[in-house]
Length: 260
Image 1 (cartoon, rainbow, N blue to C red):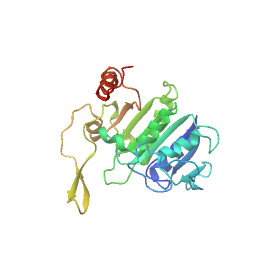
Image 2: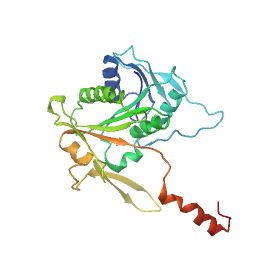
Image 3: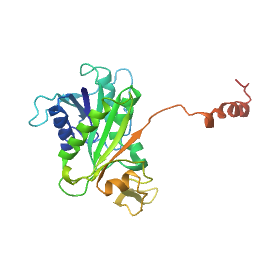
Image 4: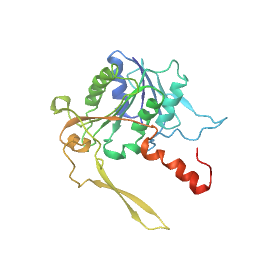
């Protein structure tokens, strides 16, 4: 398949390089377009778009991977997807792979993840996508494991319905030590706990600490802690149904407007 690979850690990320090399060696046609600098937390943002806006794009070869065209874009990962879909880098990709992110993207905080955001934008363009992250345990990263998981996940996505988006989290273990792959629902909390300290007006500071909440055994955060690859299907923008259908007549009545 013709694959676009991006991330939110930036074009220099070893996780990005590991994914690109693994998928290239698996026989896929790989194009890498990634942010020139760290863009974590960008979600599905594409930044400010208006007539005349310009973006810098530079060639940025991956070490020891001359056969993989790689570009650095001064913008968030979703913008990388958008420009690829507009054929800035050649023919449109058939599937988007985002990652491998340094650190898990678990729980409801995936909403703010640039790794997941790139996949959501791909889905909105009608493509299937893989968002893949690897747990950061403070030890040396086993990026080969993420690469192997990505190859297997892309093979599955090739036969899946169009616009399938998988959020996959990989334990930081050698592949032989991974306990298996499990479907998981999003946990209420991610891999860490975030708090804010300080006073307003003034300065506030983010404090990230280990999570102390016990989570249900079928959640992505819990299963990743137990050494499993977790797989969660995500659905992006869609029109809501019955619950919101009552809003227009109520709003019209409050404004004194005629009903539809």
